[in-house]
Length: 338
Image 1 (cartoon, rainbow, N blue to C red):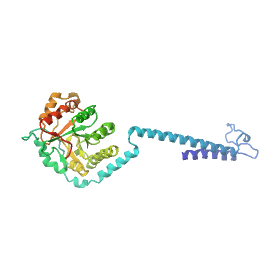
Image 2: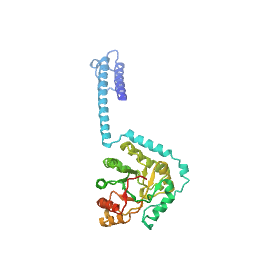
Image 3: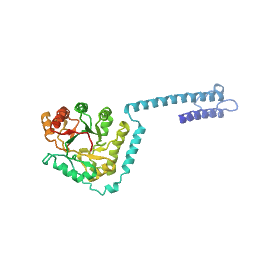
Image 4: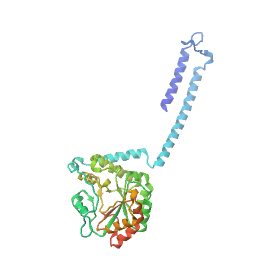
């Protein structure tokens, strides 16, 4: 606005000076362009009039620019109300994420193995149904604050992955509330930003929020610094927007390395895998409800960590009966306490 005022004033002053300097002794305007008709001096306003006009014009420009500025600020305010987060907050989130990531001792973590492992579950089990793969990995990688299976007890744990919303989370939350059962919901940044009301409901109804990353990429394939920043970006967002501090991390696709487990651990996170999962995530080929219920029930075991996808219609439909069946077997649907 200041630049505009100065420009207008300068143009007017130049006009005045040029007009005054162009007068000859006979009070005629001298022009080097004879083809242009220039009015006589007595038809021009005097310098005082020009100065007064300039001041009025500058005042008008000032008022107009101020009005435009107010309108622009109002528009920006409206945009902030819609998005729920302003640009300054976005920048602070980024700064905090970078600071936390850079505080990690990557040189020490870099000495660990970067070999990538996949994780599922299934295969042979022991005499109480605990998968041998889960117990073996727990013994091998538990030192990095990782959980593939919970300690052997009658407690079992329900966890849901929330990469995006497919319309079934409200039904799942309704069932959990009706059955007085708790769960862990592992959310992505996209889910947190697009489904804030569901996230608030999870918190208010006593469930646990877990970090499922920003980009949902394979963490062993990412540079350690980028992996750390990914975790902390979502961590900081949830903490600022919802006032909730997450401590559980589920690696996308269950892929991990010793390095990636150590990165999460260095950021104060426990990496949570699972000891039960089934093919519930293919939307075009959902398992039959009777088969799903049978699988969920029969494969229950002491310390089970269930992975269920909230995008599954089948999971939403069988959840209530599955909880009843698990309890009838003598197990508890436990609140997260690990």
